[in-house]
Length: 428
Image 1 (cartoon, rainbow, N blue to C red):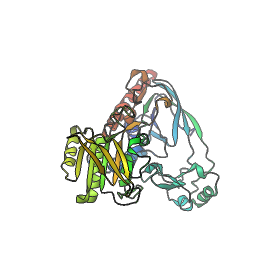
Image 2 (tube, rainbow, N blue to C red):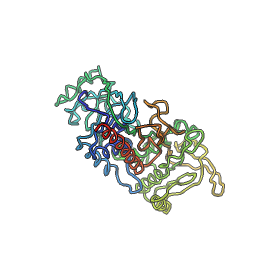
Image 3 (cartoon, rainbow, N blue to C red):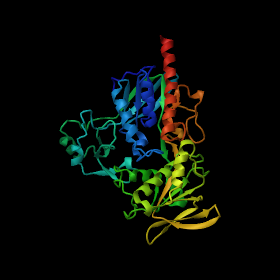
Image 4 (cartoon, rainbow, N blue to C red):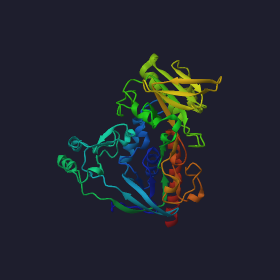
C-alpha cells in the first residue's frame, strides 16, 4: 500500500456505502483524487442488503451496478477495503489519517472462481444476511461484491482448511502470510460516510425479539425476500419454515421513545408500506397484513404509494402503540396486545409473523470518532463550522432514505471540493 499517493489536495471518503460511493464519484469526476476507506470486504453498504427500493419497487442493482462500474472505470478513485481510520488529526486543508488495513488473505489474482470455497467445510454466521444463514470460511461477501474477490475468514488461518484452500486455488490468489497493515495518508478534506446500523431489537423487552422465533426485524425481513437471501426469497417463519401469510408490522419499534431512540428514523413507515406489498404480491387474496402505527409519515412523492397500500383490501391499519407481545405456545404464533386508539378497543391479535420496524442510529458511537466532531443528541454529525474540513454524508448526518442520502453525499462532496480548491489556489 506504500504506492498510494495522497496530498493535501486529496479527498478522503470514510465509508463505501451508497453515500460514500456518491461522494467519491462526484469528486473524482471533476478531477479530484479520492481515497475511499471501507471497513467491510466490499463497497455498497446497506443498499446491497435491500430487496427493493421504495417507492418504485425497483431492485438495488439498477443503481448499484452503475455506480460500481463508474468507480471501477475512474482512475481518480482508490478503494481500500477491510480498512478503518483509527486516527485523524489536522485542520481543513491539512489532515493526517492513520488507516488500519486487515488482511483478506486473498490477492488481486482472484477471479472469484470459488475453488477455495469448494474445499472448505467450516461455516460461520453470514453477516450480509444478518446472521440468519451460514457462509463458508472462504467466501464472496455477496453477489454484488466489489471488489469481486473472495475472503478467507481469519479463523481458518493456521488450520488445514486454509492450506486446502490455498492448494485448491489455480491462480495463486491465496496468501496466508498477509499481515495487518497501518498506513498514513494526507488529505485536504474528509467526507464522513459511515452510514447507519439498525437499532438493537433485543433492547425492546416487551416485544420478545430475544425470545420468540417469529418476531423479526425489518432488515431481516428484507433479506428474507431477496432471492439471494437466507430463505431464497421465500416468506417463511423462522420457527417451523411454514409460509407466513398473516404478517404484522409494528412501527416505531424503539423509535420516538425516550427509553430507546428519541428520534424518528423517517424511513420506517415507507419501509413497512413497501414490505407489505411483498406479502400481498406473494399471496394475493390469501395475504393478511396488519400495520400497527402511531402515525404514518409518508410525505411528498410517497403519499401516492401510501394511498395505494391503503386501498389494498388485504392490508389493515391499526392505530396503536403495541403494548407487548406474548406467544401462543401451541403454534408459536406471536400475539399482540394493546389498544386501538380509534375507538379505544383492546385487542389480542394473533399473527404468523411479526416484523419490527426498527429505527436507524449512527454506525459510529459518539465516543468512537477518531477526531472531535460536533454531534447532535442522537449521535449524528452536525453541519457545523467547528468540524472544519470534515463533512458528514448520508446517514452519518441524519436518518435518511437512499434518495436523500445521495443528495446529502453530493452536497458534502461539493463542500470538500471547495476546501481542496482553496488549497490548490493558495499553493498555486
